[in-house]
Length: 404
Image 1 (tube, rainbow, N blue to C red):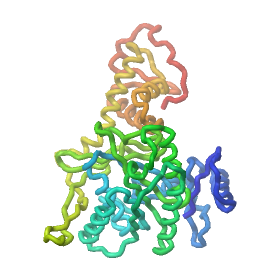
Image 2 (image 1 turned 30 degrees about the vertical axis):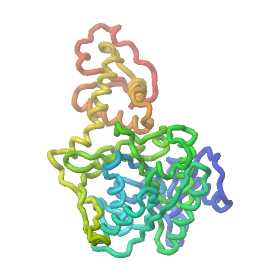
Image 3 (image 1 turned 45 degrees about the vertical axis):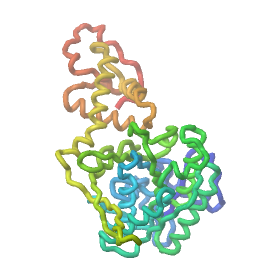
Image 4 (image 1 turned 180 degrees about the vertical axis):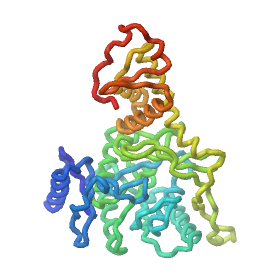
């Protein structure tokens, strides 16, 4: 598979002439076919290793999955959670499943080399992988664990070193690297300040370098603030990722959910619990164990409730906003409605806000709480629509082109 970052306004330096030719070759062909819809362009490779243009269509542009329904090759994601939430455990479990080519939590995977940059607790990560092999009865896996002191903010030297290690591992295993995990952002941030945009931008640049050099999907594991609502630090990382996931602990166990995405569905990915696996004894005769993730049953409808949390909150907030903007019955343009909703969540990406807005508005209309008309659409709360009789109450809505 050939992967390149082809941007319509490409100001980033391109390392070699060969890369430049490949980049614009992919970009131009997809543009001619009308399929160049995103910054990251993927063309599946044919048997000769060259791009297979015949199948480079919307069905696989940015949609070549590592895990069906979750990740695409060449994309950038973030998994966050509080300390002890189980984020590293579930990421390790997924990494092992992909390396083994085993279905994960009922989802198909694309087998390939996985590289785990364990800058935090490398030995523990290795024990968890050993526990996985024992639990599932598998031996050799195309799975590389890297450790050491890593600095992703002082230039891109360490990012390039990671990319070189990935390429070497791919040569040895004979398999493409489909996923790179960096665990955690804090332990690979170097001397930078996570709360400073300029430093976070440098970190993102290093991540982009790894993706560009390897063509792999890259995931950064990150700690949330103690409020548990988003990853710590400057919002530049939130804006850079294609999707973000959150791991939370609850009375029923643990849950992994997607809490922000450019072009997918938000909600619960899986419920899981920890299962301890014995690995032997230490020099004092004490047992050595490590946890593995096991799919948990939906306890008391928790999965359904959790998946509806973001949507339900969005519906409530949007109804409050529409009621305020309508002032008792004036129609409101979708662009103004969505913009006001975004003002309430300035840290959330615009594409994620648009997705939440569309889903919530559709649900509100289907439930009969909101009515719409016209092109572009204007919206009125159903509760006040029947109470409006005066013609001057239906003043034209502010013009906008963002309405759905």
